[in-house]
Length: 214
Ligand code: PCA
Image 1 (cartoon, rainbow, N blue to C red):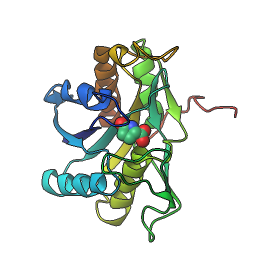
Image 2: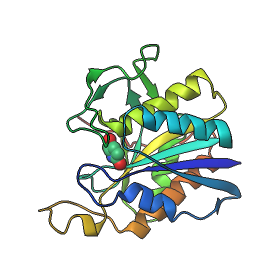
Image 3: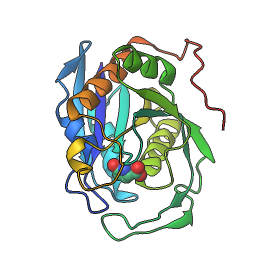
């Protein structure tokens, strides 16, 4: 089995992106599966094209894309990606699409097709805060998750995947008032556990109440 794990380049004035820092620190193998890592640019469309080529070349069974969610305090496994780009800031190449569909022939939204609840449960059991998120935003992270699930729908029907958002790491918040952060080694450990859960559980068989009220 092969798992492709991506992280993003720094964006929005940050010197690092904890997503790729954490991905880089993953072991070469998790539960006998080969781990392939890839850094993708925080750029609309180019990120999906690079992901597509990497899937084509490596033929992974599972794809987990990871990105920074500055302001979130826990690890969030995304449930859904929507067919819209609505950028509050420009990406790393100056693109700032507003209310544009990602793929005109795509569904309005796609759900993750890995066991997101089993993934969150496994991370929590290790004492690391984690939850399901029902929005990946409307910037490049939602964009790549949508692109991943679109590609799975259109041409890689055997692949399973989702997106995981991770908090800032402590060095990023030294000058940010009241911003939450998580130690890099904990983020890497959480990603490893999430990948393990995705490998071990074929479907989201567990019914645990991890929904939100509003
Ligand atoms: N986070 C951004 C894009 C790249 C990243 O790491 C986002 O949440 O959209």
